[in-house]
Length: 180
Image (cartoon, rainbow, N blue to C red; front, side, top):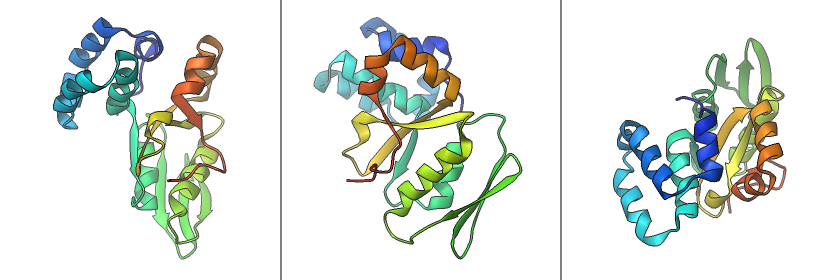
């Protein structure tokens, strides 16, 4: 996976119908690969352009986590979106052992459905201050959550430039967050 560039992020917060069309054309191969081209066409009938943009953006740059996902796989999914980083994960009797750039980090799990967000919160803490994971707010009430991994500095720039839009589009990973 690749990170969104500045023009992709500008599109996310300032995009219009024409830019949505151009974004879909630019990432058509990726969108076909994940099998959502038909969904994008159907969305035009049910959602406003402002609602479509974050959904289509998440199809390209998001990390999708199902509530039944294996915890080690969650770490691998996030790792795919962090170019140049070295992440290894193994399952242990207590949970996970995540190595980030050579430093091991144990993640104690409860072996319950709460583990998905225990893993997400722990991995988010491990990769800070360099990266941060945030939830696409629009996916929150689903059993499948979409996340965006960006460098911490990029989140700070976005919050400075688009404070209301960032707060509306993304949710910071906190202790209260879990699958509904």
